[in-house]
Length: 113
Length: 120
Image (cartoon, rainbow over all chains, first blue to last red; front, side, top):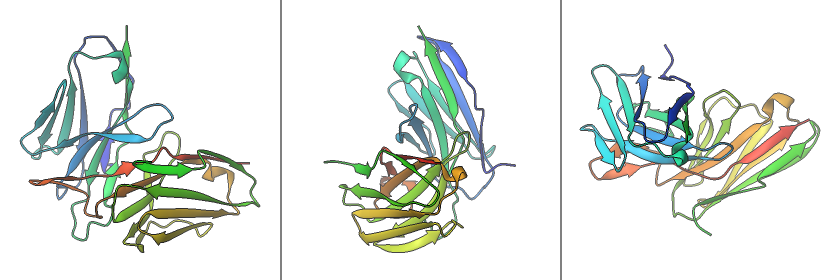
């Protein structure tokens, strides 16, 4: 099983749609989770940190399910500008924590007019 | 200048050339990183520096040589590269190397725009 697994997509959705991405991770000791957004030929940028109780930032909602070892990202009322690749990022969770993030390959979202 | 800046943004080099990538962060962070992003692959961690000391070398070939003269600057020296080394090289920084989400907030990576390297 891959350490961090995401559906690569692409997810093609119309403007205004609600879309959800899931990400599974293999290390039960992982403690911290993030969603990054990467536009084509640009650097990844932090979209949201994922808190244990779930968190919302405007149209974006992140959830964590530790029992099933997955995190999700929900985007409501999709905009054209949401088109990007969404990277699921998980820490390895062991002590020392030297730059210990694992990146998924990303899920590509394309929002159409 | 703010954030993390990388130069050059694009680099084409032959297999016998020697070149360097430069990264500078203006965030007051203590940790800096080099990542490699190849097509269709997830980001791969190459090196981690904490307070100018290398704390992780992720089995990177010796043709890649990092240098961290101070906590704001990071270099990646390149020599005798192979065509398969062509990729986007991303520099990042963070407050410290314990990348986490906690009750007091999150310590996260901030990336530079990257240096796109083509090896002929």
